[in-house]
Image 1 (cartoon, rainbow, N blue to C red):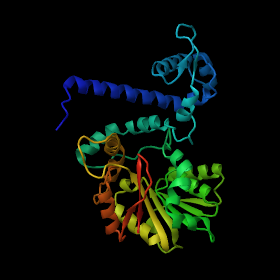
Image 2 (cartoon, one colour):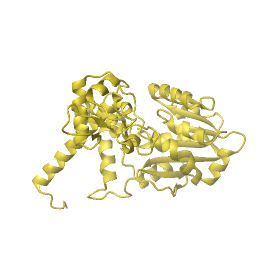
Image 3 (cartoon, rainbow, N blue to C red):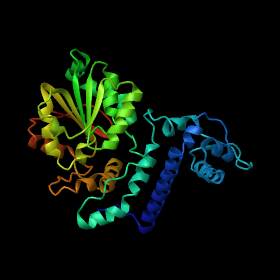
Image 4 (cartoon, rainbow, N blue to C red):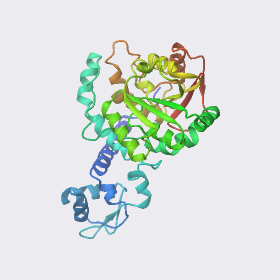
Length: 354
């Protein structure tokens, strides 16, 4: 049963959520226009100076800075001065500028602005049980919300929990790693950075994502050991087996997750390990749900479930893939066991399939 929420309380909740959504759209503008980067030094700056630094219009900068000041995202030196001067607090640089910091969150504004373009198409898709058209790559490209976790944690904390895998990745001959649905490549890059001997092969069906992954690997200095291919994992059957195959936050997106796991299993060497990482939702459906479940259901509604609906034989998993569902898929794919690894995060759960 509901907890007695009155009509006015629900209206207030929707109002707060609308303010939060608009704040994220303002953050989108700051990220896309380079406003945060222009303020990263922490110096006081006027709207005109910010406009000059970023090639934007002064009137827009005045409104954006005032919004950010009343929202406590930037500081204002003297609210009564004219013109006012503003600065980005040092602590906020981590969250709004440094894309490798674990607190970086400006990509959330990009994600929500990008997915909002789908809403009219989703109305049609929901009525017809179909999939909306793919999101265009431009103008933002695909944001990298998981980049900080990969760069900071994947090779230093997460993979080492599988001690046998960690040892193999550190020894000769070079271990082979397959990163299925690698997106823009940061999980592949982070693996290569943590383990200087490994060879990593990233796969994704999105040509634009693979092009971005190649650029990212080049900039990171690991392109000699990390390769990317626009292909399906099933096409690699018969090649040299992999010591580690990973599917990170992607299995729930796949129309046919059992087929994907079968293809992954076929790529494993005899001693190889299969790692699946997905959302850390509650083990069972409960009401009311946690903030994590609410968040993941929200993304499922508009971002993860709809693309999978274009396949008439789709499993239609959605973002909320609970452990029992993952175990069922693994069994159907021929794996004999699923181990939940002892890695504590509030956003992902780590499964080793045997």
